[in-house]
Image (cartoon, rainbow, N blue to C red; front, side, top):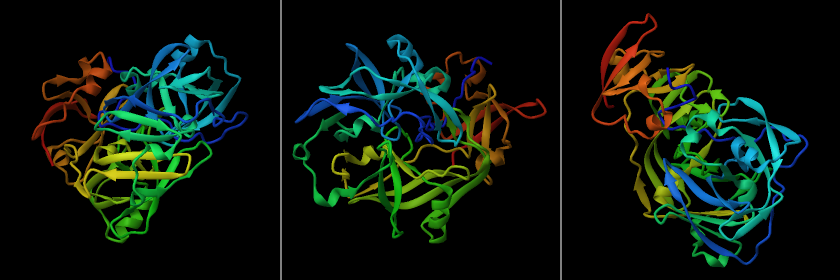
Length: 397
């Protein structure tokens, strides 16, 4: 089968989680060489990823803005710059899998007109991650650099504003939320679901998920009647830099009201995985308001476009899918869903989606950027565990 790299049609987070152990080298050692600045930087917005241009050794590079990660470069860029690694650190991805990753010291980095030095970068072969190579980027612009700035993100205008002066922004006191940081400057804030006690989430601009909840947090909200399980299944929907996530209970849940500062988002549907312990809000939050991250004064500002906004959730057909061991499979089939009623089974190999033959795709990016899960129904041709081939029609939930 031509597709041979980790791939997940349902858009998932494939970026780094916090390095679990930092042995001999501090990732958070960068320095800034600009002061009294206010710089507006345009960006591309592709599949809920912000892509900005950095200048390294007089050449423009493309990086994903990822506040949930340290600075990271591709192995290809490391080789081009001839950077040598003397250290490795143990790093954990979003699935909980760990591996040792090299660390290098970068030459001067320029973001817009702002310059940084002494930046420590993790090095990873992005071509091995499947999805990340589709964005044609050189790495992740993470919080170990952004920590020197106030960063405003405006998705409507598609620009970032970087400054070291809070006076350069029009911000209201009631939009302000306190921020906390971990040792790699990842930003955490408190949000509320309905009338629940506020709980802490990571603001992860590298995540294309509006809200990710840990199983523990979901359980607490469920007991209070503030979260409702719509569907339940077994399997895995997540994938990380080091492979697919562990199988376990998977839930698709409804949250009636999410409060971020003065803004309220209604009718959020999200997935909860038994084996994931992350609470986070991702870049889709920016569709509902302007985000300002004040690393310098430890504040997060959310200026909602409207006081109360309804979230439009994507199409759902009662199953999730992953590429596992070169086979594109139905990794979760939810109980009582239209997919289960149509006869789809967990582990069935998906050969065709409507008119699109999955096993004929030679370029996973064509599959990733294609919008094949649309319409009121899907026709899937699948092969089951007995190698029998059948076509099932699945109505949208």
